[in-house]
Length: 67
Image: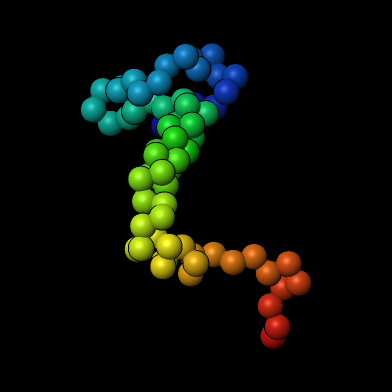
């Protein structure tokens, strides 16, 4: 279960409740995911596989796409 900032029990992070629920502070979780992405990127950026696939990943089309 994600706990949002401002909740009364907000200082609880990765707390297991019984065997069915894990309390996760949303902002800390997002920070951890982003840090994991940064570490991954540092380890693969510049490799042949990354460079080949990254160019196909996503593209911005400021003027939209033609029908």
